[in-house]
Image (tube, rainbow, N blue to C red; front, side, top):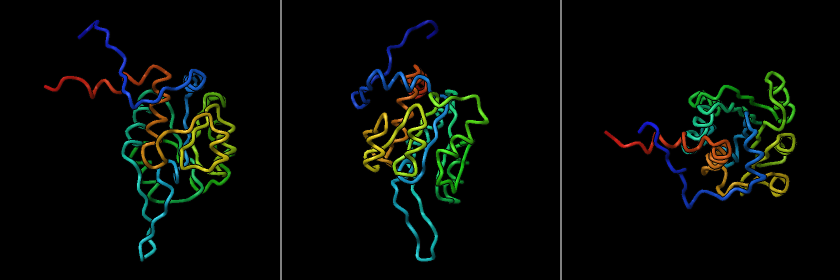
Length: 194
């Protein structure tokens, strides 16, 4: 209804984020993500023929699409090269995929050098030691409960959900909520059906 004011969407399962975390998340214009352990559960599966199999969580995919629709740039930086990762990122419409990059901080710096983005406007989500320099460079460092202890020690926020089980969606909700864009992202799904 035109001119009506809707109450903000809330749910008891949504985390209560501290104000200092929300303040960092309000600045984010780019989120860069690791793949294995973040977008997947970190396990690698191989068939008897040597084919690699990887599982991605569908919740994460929609969350990333909602972020991009809200004007947040999404990038993926991974140490491994995988055609499956390339296909998934293409399917999601993620514009920046950097594979085979163990030097994730350098890769992230290369990416942002082509954009008008300062480190405080970057979120980085990773789970292991190769992610730590990029996570510490970014204004908002995110990790997962099944990540390495030292990464959790340096992260600004550790999701409640494990990597590969919807953790990326939780990070997306955090950024959207902090920027006042989560309600708009969810509202189309709450509209009355004809």
